[in-house]
Image 1 (cartoon, rainbow, N blue to C red):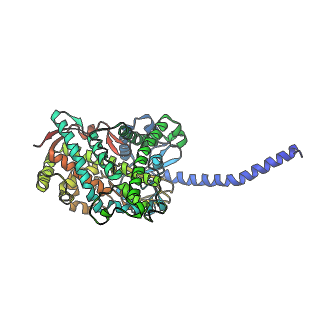
Image 2: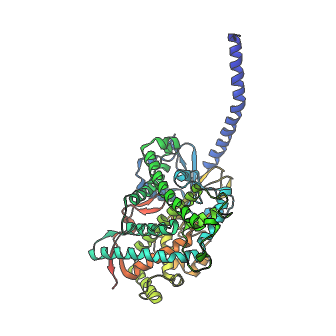
Length: 522
C-alpha cells in the first residue's frame, strides 16, 4: 500500500509534533536553569567574558608558567571570591579566604570533586581521591586502618633506608661545591619510599633507573603536566577531542605504561598472598608473632579484598586495587617530595633558623640516624618549619568541588552545578591571620598562635571529611628526610622567592627546580 503525499506530510507533522513534545520541554527547562545559573554567577565579581572563550583567553595566549601570576592578579583585582568562565558553559567560582572555604570544608553535602578531576580518571579511576557518594564512603572506611600509627611506625625503617641512599648522593654533590637542583634527588628518594611502602617493591631508583622505571617516571610527569594543560584549554575538556589530539594520544600511552607496571605488581602480590594462604591457612609464624613482616599498602588492600574469606569472591577487583595503589603512588610521593623540597629551599634561605633546627636535631638524636618515630615528635621546631613551608608553598595549591546545592558564601549565593575552586596558596597568605604573610616564620605555628586562628586558616591537606588520609604519613616522611639532610649538611639556596616561577600542575613545583649548594657539617 503506497502512502500518498498528503499522508507523508501528516506523518512528518506528527513525528515533529511528538519529537517537540519530548525535547522542547527539556530544552526549555535547560534554558531556564541556564538563565538562573548565569544570573547568579554574574552577581559575583570577575572579568568580562568573551564569546566562546569565556575568561580563558589569557590562559590560552600565555604559557602555563604564567598561571599563578594570573591568579594572583585576579585576587588583587576582584578580592577573595570571584568567578571565571572556563569557556562558554563552565562557570567556576574561586575562593581565597577561610571565611568562604569553611562552609565547604565543614559540609557533608559539598564533598563531590569537580568534574575536572575526571581528567585523571583514565589514570586513577574512581579511587579515594576522585570517587564520591557511597563508593567514597566505603573506600575511606576500608582504607583508614592502613594509616594506623603502628603501620606508619613500621614504615620508618623504609624512610631511613632510602634517606641514607639520598645522603650518599648528596655527599657526592656537596664535594663539587656547585649550585645544583636538589628537587630530582628528593623526588627519586620519595618515589623509592612509596614504591616499597605502597607496592612492596624495592626499585632502588636512586641507585639505578631501568628502562621500565624511566618510562614510568616520565609517564607520571607527563600526565601531571597534561592535566593542567587540558584544564586551561576549554576545547580539550571534551574527552573525544582530547583523545584525538597529539597530547591526548601521548597521555593515554603514558597511562597504559603506568597501569602495566601496577598490574604486574598486583598480579605478583596476589600470587604471594595465595601461596601464604594455601589451603586456607596463613603463615603460622606470622600469626603467632615469630616473624614480623612489614605490610605494604597493596598487601593491606589484598587482605581487605578477601575479608569475607579466601575462597569467596574478592570484595575488591584487581582494577579496584589498582585505583587505590595508583592514587597512593601519586599522592604519596609527588606531594610529599614537593613539601620536602620547599622546606629545604626555605631553610636554605634562612641560615639562622636552619642552625636552630640543626641544634634541636643534635640535642634529640646526636649522631644517630633519624630512626625513632618517638624522638621525631620531639623535633618541634622542625615540625613548625615543615608546616610553615606548607603554608607558603602548599604541595597541592588548589582543590575543586562540584556544588550539588546552592550555597551561601558571605553575601553571595553560589548556584548548584558550580565548579568551586579553593586556592590554598592564596588562603595561606591572609595578612589578617598571618602578619607579614610572605615571610618564612615558623613561630606562626607555635601552639598559642594556632589557637588564635580559625580552624580552616591552614589547610595544606584539605580539611573536613575529605581531608588527606595520608597526611600523617607525609609529615613523618618529610620530617625524617629534612632532619637527615640538615643533620648532615648546611644548605644555601641560590634563588630568592621573587625569582621563582611556580608551576601548579597536580602539585606545586618550581619551574627551574630548587637550586642549592651543600656543605658537609662534619
